[in-house]
Length: 238
Image 1 (cartoon, rainbow, N blue to C red):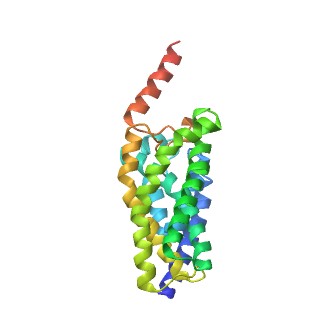
Image 2: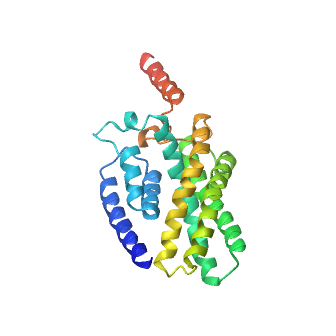
Image 3: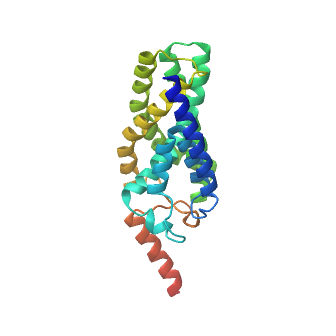
């Protein structure tokens, strides 16, 4: 299994290198989303790269808004943004707690808290401040429930997968390549489980979808796009 895990890790690194190069030529993608895509591809390897190409990478210059407009891509953007931050905290905490040899139920408790704080404060609050031009305190309140729901659904899929794979493959050390393969598979399952709730939150306006840099993260749901188009038309008329 270590050989398979090592090969997967090499493919993931190659995918990240290609992605970083490609993102330099994608000016419509928000900087925070570029960071999220790098992290997702680091977690999911070739699968992360495939998701990027099919849901976010514009096929031709100037077509990003139209390309990401379908609701499934908006929901995908929301998931990517959520999982990038949450998984960063979870994986970092898992590496530390596994090294310390703490019981798994303690590991998961710490991982949930750290994942929530990283996702909430770094990947929700800061982008919300910039997108909506509001204070840090207001952004913290705005992103709390969206982050809580998204992370909770994510760990419902991720934590049981981690538990059974680590037990089944007898791996707990972060120094083992298989440990990182377990994390990759678990993050993928967590992403799938949290997808429906992210779709729901984007549809209700609780979260932003797959936006463009010039649109300040406002995604392509039909209501939002129509509102923006009407707003711009009104200014043009004036």
